[in-house]
Length: 101
Image 1 (tube, rainbow, N blue to C red):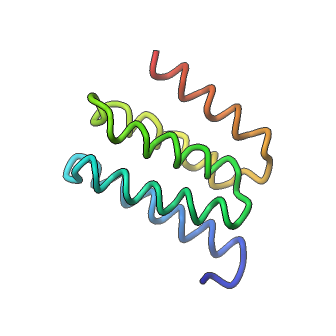
Image 2 (cartoon, rainbow, N blue to C red):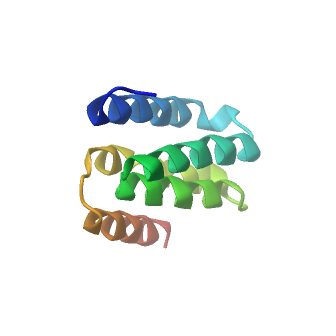
């Protein structure tokens, strides 16, 4: 387990970057599994915005059109990783909703 919140944010950011670069080669189930693991870890650390983003991305990974929607969700990953506010969760999820429609 990472020693500090900054280290955890760095680790989760690196995992998100890896998913972003490999998204076209990952199966939808693999994307879902990876994003759900990030959601769980972010939730335990109290990173509400990242938890919401990862949860929504995990859901989108299982739907038709995931090759388009997952990168759209991950475009907000840096904002979610940097966020320390639970209010940012709703803002980021709203931005994703607008982007998808």
